[in-house]
Length: 236
Length: 291
Image 1 (spheres, rainbow over the protein chains, first blue to last red):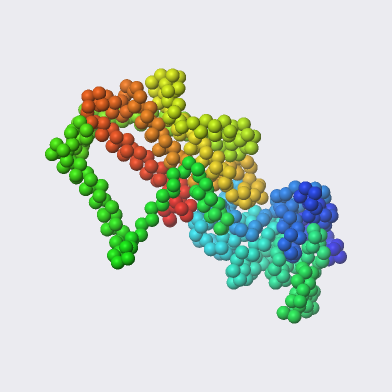
Image 2: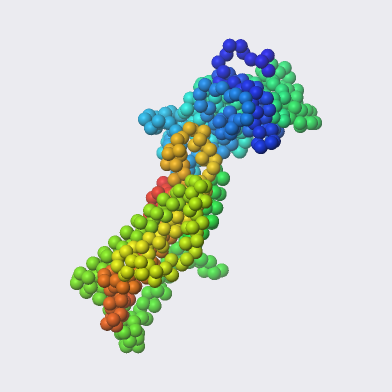
């Protein structure tokens, strides 16, 4: 995969020889991965292929059995659910873990970026699903992370909200320029957002694509679906 | 979001010592033909108790009920007025409240401390929980004779009994509340790099608070019950003393008065706990008064 690297770039994370096992069951083995700052990488795969396991390892949530993960800073994570603390106002949620001094101002700025700047003191339960996920995004970005990990953050949203979120995420990532790893099973989402698409199968990276260089979007989509084990949808 | 909501739902349902969470649903009652408005419904619900009081008053005044058996309500009110002016009523009330407060503070403190320890640590659970559960199996009022042997019939006996009654509901609900904090939120806390102290302050305790407050509310009722029993047995002051003293002289009006006061304070304590819930749990859809 080194063929696709921009040489001498600024890595947000470098993974070498990663191995993750649950007891005897090896989920990920000998995995290498490098994500540059400002690069948007989508990780596609069927459920159970190990993509969420990889994300959790990168987030430092699970121990790894072998290999190295080198990241300059603490990664930020947006989960599939917003995971807002229901007992804290929106700004307290966004500033969770920040030093008290200047926390409200930082949270206000981040919430304004996701279009919720007028709701600093509201409770999370007053939000719609899309708004809650935007707060989660603000909470991740307020950390100014070098690496942003997105674990199917749009999967639970309705189609229209998802499209709006895609636009918002793209804009925010362009502005803050973290390295991004988006775990998803949505091929369209990967094509729309990513600079580079990785297809994961059986705990290893099975294929790597640059959507920009794909000549025929239809065929590219069919190719990705085929790599994910979905046959016969090429004509669609 | 649904995972959060459902976890709280489970908490309410699974709280073993919680009194059935009687949420008053006020909606017009339909009997097929007539619909009764909310106001009318409330007014109507007061008719029966007031009628009962009136009948009692009537029967007592006409001598159908002996004053030694049950004095008229008006007589009880008059007695309250007299004893209040006289000064002994307020002093006895104060004594009783002080005992309840002391017992509540001691028992609640111990219950909360042990509950927190067991909620957090598997080791503490292994060491403590079984013993606590075994002691809890004893109806605490059954310990009364033993407690009297230990403490005599002084203040110690009363405060001990109240503490005992309070400690268990607080312990159980604290442990349960901490256990039921959403693990996904704890994971979030770890991702954000929170220290253990911050994790407890920002996530664990707020998450356990609804359950803890349920325990406190239940404990208030138990504390009061324990006090009534403890005071009825050998006291030199307090509401229970007032009642037992009155019994000697067949002063049923005073006895009824103490019963009414016990009831009123019970209601008052419960409203206080509810107020606390509404204040502290304003974020919670089941408690919050809205914004």
